[in-house]
Length: 66
Image 1 (cartoon, rainbow, N blue to C red):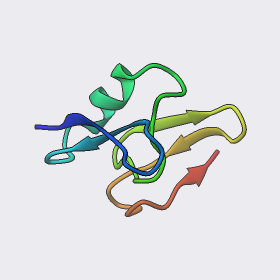
Image 2 (cartoon, helix red, strand yellow):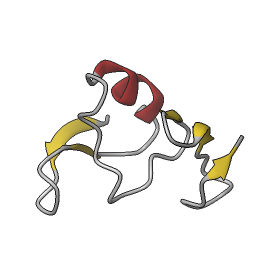
Image 3 (cartoon, helix red, strand yellow):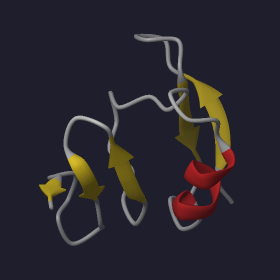
């Protein structure tokens, strides 16, 4: 199961656990509270500066900007 942790680098919310529930966990955080120091495989990440950003386990942390 995935769970929220506080990033030691930026102080925002990141994740711990298995990595299979990241889309749900990411969606539960307030906008602007997500740590981007670590990838979010499987979560659809939106960014005001870059449009929609998708991260999946097949991209291994490489973000695809659309």
